[in-house]
Amino acid sequence: MEIPNQSGIGIVLFVVGVLLFIPGLIWQEGLLTYGVLLAAAVVLTVGTYLFGTSGSDRPV
Image (cartoon, rainbow, N blue to C red; front, side, top):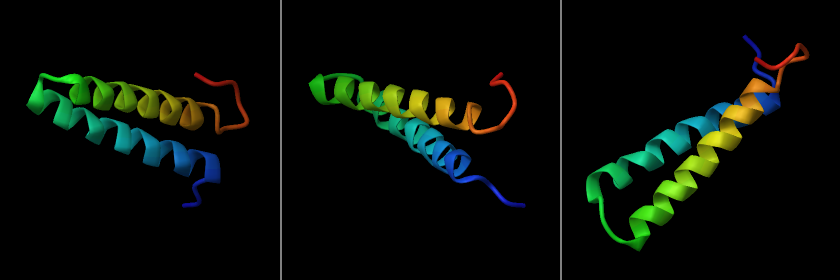
């Protein structure tokens, strides 16, 4: 099974974004937590976008 480059990057960013949410759920206070949650949201959004638009068909 061959995964296109854009899909692979999207999957990796998606997983990293999900994993970045874990510290935010554990600490629950402070500016660092909000920064980590913001970074997680951005990485997760970019990963989802890359994976969703990697095919030649219309993105779902």
